[in-house]
Length: 377
Image (cartoon, rainbow, N blue to C red; front, side, top):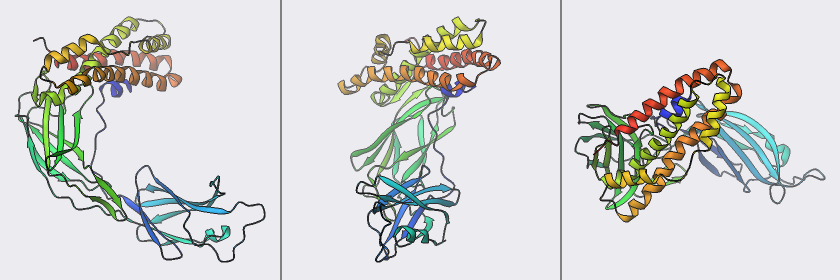
């Protein structure tokens, strides 16, 4: 059941695309040309600048055309494009004009625009221009994590694929990284799994994506005015609870794990008390009600645990611990409720019983991994 994904699933992974993204090229009757990236979510833009049919008069009672509206979505190696016009002073009326499919190298005229007093535009598709990125130097403040490679990403926005190798005898759970432009920090982030599932076993590798800050979209791609000079692995959390590198950098991450651990402890109590219920659908409803009633305030004991494990935090970092504990706890609660609400309307009693049977061991496995991060010391 999907509870396993909700409670044990990783943060969204990034995979290098197999091809470059597409751009929509629009050529107007006056010779003006625009080129726009069409991301997976689609592209939409309107413009009040377009040539009109000479001496055109709108039908009586029709609002004047004040903008040309174009919507595009990628579909494999082609773009599906819808062309419409907006009418009225505040563009309050949308009037569809044409829909078409545009492939790379094709030129598709939209002659139907003449019917609304607009000179035709010609649409074409092209591969989006991506800038060449230099390879920055890399280093690691974590003794047992080596940076094996930093590769430029061929994507709609510039970035790098960073691969690290775990040289220790313990699995890697979470790492923190930073990029530098000169001596200034560009981007800081973290990689790992909410349930403490290892991202790199002993001797194994882990590849993740690092974005580039300061990138600006241009007519032919993204220009980066401040290229990355260095990628640094700042800190790490190991599966046995050991912290390495800049421990202050991983303190908020440790706090997130501690918040999840607190929430899972409460969720397990609820699941165990409902495991023997006669009606599985009623039991699922009871579980939802009790999970929804769980406290959302930060756990003082959890905050104290993180503070004890990372005693060298700055006042600024220390102030992030309590909110991070709360966020970690709320994430377990919120995602479990979301899962139940999504499944409940379609579940049969047999499916609800299966959910209950899988939920308990899934939570126990996640709980065990999280507990290992906080050994008695």
